[in-house]
Length: 417
Image 1 (cartoon, helix red, strand yellow):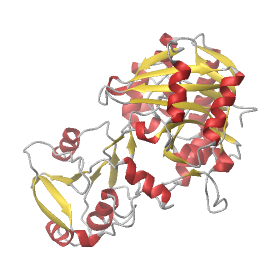
Image 2 (tube, helix red, strand yellow):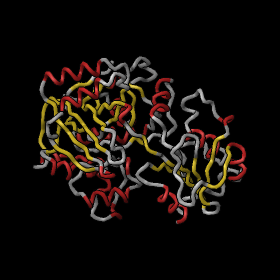
Image 3 (spheres, one colour):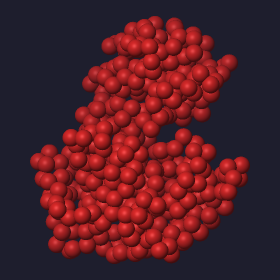
Image 4 (tube, rainbow, N blue to C red):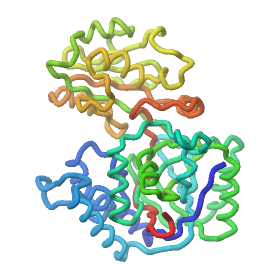
């Protein structure tokens, strides 16, 4: 059973123009502080001034440490400004419909229901019967940083993306009926020319109907926002902000890797590692190679250019939903033999789908990294099978896209927590 509660006190944009000015990509969609600083200067009223306040400086040389006391003070100040701004207003007891139209998937309409999910429903070792299934390990410092931000601002800006199976299709159909023929309260354009539309639901009967629809779902899977949900649990909050989407409407894009070498990085040469675990040779085209088929992997170095790797069948167990995902195969059979046996190693950089293989190649050619690895997107069936087996996804393996934009619906804490 899945529970959704209305947001007791919500902060929302007053119209589409305000939503365009306030909303922003999530903090984890950026490749470093300089990129965030530039985004804030391009959109100086955006919620990035709250979620990444340490980059809210006049000059990039003045960026301070994230999660520092000063940064949290800035976040609190900026959130207060947002509350008092003419661009926002407060509303009470609402759910919301969130629709995303993606031109790269013209035949798919992604529509979900937003509100407050129950922290006590997250499955943990202490709560093995929980119905919200995490599938990625939590890095406590990162979750603690999100918790500090929530405490400092007394608000939740970041949203957790939860997937449900909706095998009957009734959930998505009910959302379609709810908004049919009704203009959204506001809509914005996101990355990749995606369109994000919001309808606010305050009518008690509609809220009750959607609560019952979700109660019929046995489980939900955390697609994006493991650390944001963990932050709520750390704070002892009863609820966290989320949107539930039907899994078959969601998209997963590639999540690639960069590796920097050092003199102490393992003793095996790259060719020996490849010969041990992969069939390999030149990539099928001269240009940057981004594989889209499971068990095809791209690798780029200055010396060899783009290669295509095919994992040897003997190196993974196809019955293990997690170990058979290419991201785990690369970690166990490429990076570990090269001396990087910890996915948290600072020499390893995870690169989401908002940076393509051309960008990765430039990073290698510029000398900022030594090996680029491109990986096929995890399929939705692989993702669900990992959740069903109660295993963990390989770190940074699912780049769900399009992503929910921050700032379209925010939670003001008090009764919500």
